Image (cartoon, rainbow, N blue to C red; front, side, top):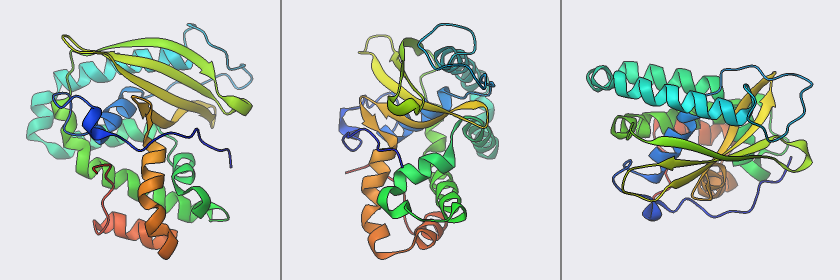
Length: 234
């Protein structure tokens, strides 16, 4: 398994309080903003570019689309939380490489694990996060602007890092990096870094203790039932 960069757990106290209710909500919002439904060229080399269809252009175009949708449907989503969950789930499923991200979160505990167990864990983690933090997207500042800073290859041909900033009036830009790879011919996100802090590493640290004493399937079942909650709060 490819090693992830060494980075710190999510520091929720460093994130702007007025933007979202927690750092995890910001990370979930950032993931949603990167929704990438486009197909990547199978033999196209990964290079920094501004060409239509490049990962950075897909992040920008879909960020703007999701912000418009959240703004135009805010009243509807406020009345109908089930519809909000359907919207979030649809976007999340389209662009996020759940199984690959789940293996990264599992780390050493995922070595030799079956694909079925990894998928069970990934699905349970995603459902737990969306159930806990999805409604916080109603507080998302849709007046944010997204600026793409760079697109650089990851080591060993793993994919690309798209570095961006969320620009807000009267506040410092919030750096958000998307780590993306080609999966099934599509560009998909497998990690999001907000202010240099990794979504994957945060949950790897959280679940390490649980996975030392329980099986992957047990932890997944407890996530799904709510006995365990995915959180970065200290």
